[in-house]
Image (cartoon, rainbow, N blue to C red; front, side):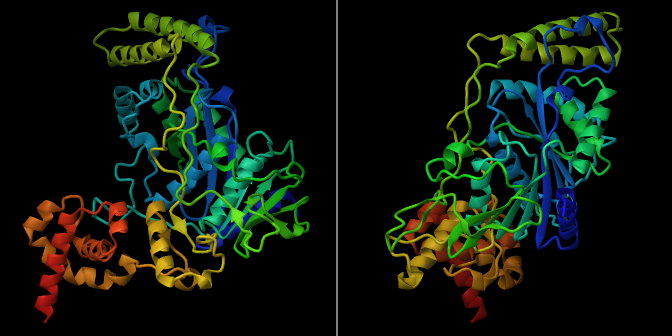
Length: 532
C-alpha cells in the first residue's frame, strides 16, 4: 500500500467513525507567497528594494468532526526555525477541535489585548475592525451553531481515541525526536490511546493540502493585501468550506520541556511511519520502514528515560502532569530588519503618492491614511536599534495540553510503591481528583478504565440540578453574590464546593471562596428541609 493510499484510507475511517478516529494533515506554505504588504499589480519602484514582512502560514486539513481546515498565521523570523512551531500548531489545533462550536471566524473576532509591541502593531484594533467590517458580506453574522443560550457555556468535543497525523518528510521541522516525544506524551497523558505519525516520500505532493495552498496563492494574487487581518480574511475565504484562521502570538518551547526526560534514540530518519501507544503502563513506540510493513521492534521501545533498569522498582520517567511548556524565546531583532525597512519606505512612498491624487472627501483617502499610519508604526519598530522585549520563559497564556483524558495514560508510582494495589484507595482518589483539576482535564473514558476513584459533579448530581434550578432563579441575593456563575448550574457547583471543601488542601488549590461554600451549604440545607 502506498503512502497516499494509507492517507486517504485514514481519512475515510475518520469520516465514517469520527468518534473513534481522527485524521489530519499538516504542512507549511511557501513564505515567499504570503509576504505583506503585497500589491495586486507590478510596481517598478518596489522591484528589487528590500523585502516585505515574511509571513509563515501552516495549513491543517481535518477529517471527521470539527473545522474542515485551519490556517495558523504568524510573522516569519520571530522564532527559531525548529520543531517547536509544529508542536505548537498541532497543540492549538487539538484545543480548537475541543472548543469548536461552529464559528469559523477564529481570530477574526480577536478580543485579546496583546502585550508584545510588534504583535500589537500588526493586530492594530482600528485596522482590524475596519478590515473585518468590510468583509461582513462574507463572514457569518451568527456563526455559532450551538443551541445553548447560556453565555457562560463553553462546548467540549472530546478527541477520539485514535489519531492519524500526516506530516511533511522534513527532519528539521517534523521527523525528529521532538515530535515523537510530543505524540508519546499525548498518549501518556491519556489524550489519545494510539497515535500514528505518517510521512510521504521526499519529492511528493500532498494532494489536498497543496490544493488548499494553491487556492490561497490564487486568492492573494489578485488583491492588495495591506495588513495582517486582511491576509487572514483572504486565507479563510480561499476555501469554499472556509479555513479557521488563527494568529500565533506565542510558541511553546516543547524541546526544552522534554529534553531532561528523553533518552537518545536511533532509526528516526528512514522509517515512513511511527506508532505511539501504552503497554504495561509504559509509553512505547514502533516504526515501519515501508508502508504496510511490519512494526518494529516487535516488543516496542520507549524514548523516555528509566530510573534503573536493574532495579525491581524501575519505572519510566516522563514530564510531570502539572508541568507545561513555557514560551519559546522570541528574537529581539528581526534578521532581515534592514531589508524590511527599505521595502516599507518604498511602499509608504508609493501609498502617499496614490493618496495625493485622491480627493480628501473620498473614502479611499481615509483608508489609505489608515494603511500609511499602520505601516509607519510597524516600520519604526523594525528600525528600533534596541529591538523589542522577548517573552522567553513566560507561561503560555492559552495553555498547551488538550483537556481530553481517556483514562488510559501513564499511572505514576507513589512514593516508591509501584504496585497500585498496595496504595491506599482514598489517597489515590484524592490524588486523581487533584491531578485532573490541576490539569483542567475532562475525563471521557469508560468508568471502568480509570482505577483511581474520583468525584464527578456533573455525573453524580446532574439529574437533581434541573429539578432545583428554579429555586435559584427567584433568589436575587444569591444571583447577586455569584455573578460569575449561571443560576441553572449553581446547584451542581454548590454541591461540588461542599464536597471539595471537606479537604482543606484541595479547597486551597481550587481557590473556592468560603462565602460561596457557606451560601451553598445554606441552600442545600434548605432544600433538604423542604423535602422532609
